[in-house]
Image (cartoon, rainbow, N blue to C red; front, top):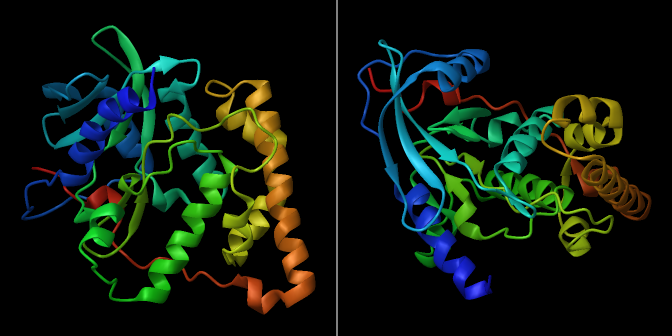
Length: 274
């Protein structure tokens, strides 16, 4: 497949995800992560919409009490797979970045197995923000979110880190989507400069250093093979080494920062239709 053909396939999906809005709610229940997972796995599909030419669908789910939309992705090729979206979500949780990706699980629908993700109400994507020259209300806070995204993108070796996969909610929270072309079996970083030029939250740095192969394998064994896990751990080592070198040269205060706990409504409470 040529690059032009690939872009023709992917851009409709990106535009669809970025432009989607959900109906305003009068009262929204708050669901835990486990409750959201159960809903995604068991709620009945009452409506679906496909995008032209690619295996992505917007599903409307209902369990009789709650109705909510979800994104379903069923592509499963050698270098482009729904499995990587689920692996990315599990890795985010291991690193303390679980609030930056929508809840994502594996589900069978219409005979196909794929990744199904909680649909998020968003304001715009990063491509639109830059195109319209819209400044975040808190530039420092936004940049710190972008640092985390760049670090994660390097860790998973995302080969299509386009700005349209960076979604922005109304409270200026950053969401990452579509890692279906990540997790390449390469042990070098894709763009080491992105790490060298990004400050790192202290908690994320410690979580990277503490990431164990056993725990990673336990969480992702159904979605990543041994070669992919080996490569990810090698990239982790390189990221940690870069930051350790920067700390030696510049001092910890110039490289690491404290990332305060996010005080915002649960993602589970957003966009649910009663």
